[in-house]
Image 1: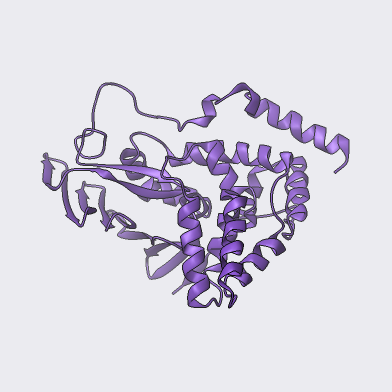
Image 2: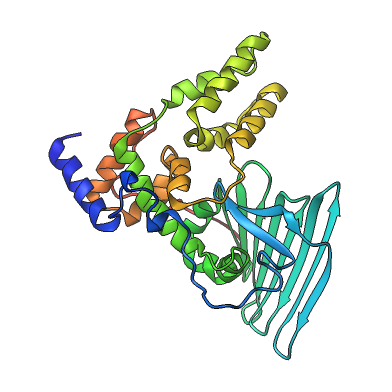
Amino acid sequence: MKWPILLAVVLDLSIRCVASFAEGPPDADSLSTARSGPHIDKLFSDGGVVRFQIIQGRLCLDAPRHRKGAETIESDLSFESIVVTADRGLPSVHYVSKRPDQSLKLDVLDAVSVRMESTLNQTSERSILEQPPYGLIGWTIERAGLVDRYEGTTLLHVRYQNPEVFDMHFGSLIERVLGGRSLANLSSETRHWSMTHAIKGTLPHRSAIDECVAMLSSKRQSSRRNAQQQLLSWGTPIIAALHETLSSNLDAEQRLRIQQTIRMLRPQIEDTPRSLAMLMVNDRDYWKLVSPQLSTMQIVAVNDHLGSVGLSQLDASGQPSARVAER
């Protein structure tokens, strides 16, 4: 990259992200909290029935912090019910909310599989989000005989494809279960840190990752073990590539080891914008989704980074991924 272009990008970033890595954790390194005050949510909080976290861009139940049983909150205009069960220490949750404008359901099976359903009562528009333990998160919208489908490796990927509709259905619920932390704010802050990581330059070439994945099916146990250790040594920036390989033709050994590697690379601590950005920096699908919000100089910087790790570059006029509509 030419020095004038790099300088322009850095100056653009400096306006948005004043704090640097050397200055220690900046304000953007913790999730923004929209709500304030002494109110404690009786259902979703440290002192409530269950607690959720955002880990590696996915909604996760904080399994150790749950209270088995049932709770109901009812008023003239709303009804809420939550039931928490547990099998071998793995909690499952069934939550229902009914208001004049919207009905919501949140289900968690064995602490890992998450399903949310929303219905807008005035239009009968129905929205379903399904997050499996591994692989792509799916989001479906049903309205007036049309079905729109989206998918992505994280909630950020899914939301970027139709943010207004996503927030209308799930924004408030996700913000509530995360204790007032907004997914919209997390997306914005993560985008800034992703640019910083892209300019800094990191990480393995995609062909090297693919070679390690191929070695996971080797007949020699030592080769399989060494390949997995190499993947682990590269850290969270390769998670996006590993999720992508799960949708390809793999043998049972490869699939098992890739899932195990993703699990080992997924720290059980809540995301910050800076840590989440490390997950996104080598994810071309992510850059394609955020490209409409980037300046020309930033897209040049991203393309330079993508080329350095063996990924195809973005179209300068990149637009969000097209949705698939079926009648």
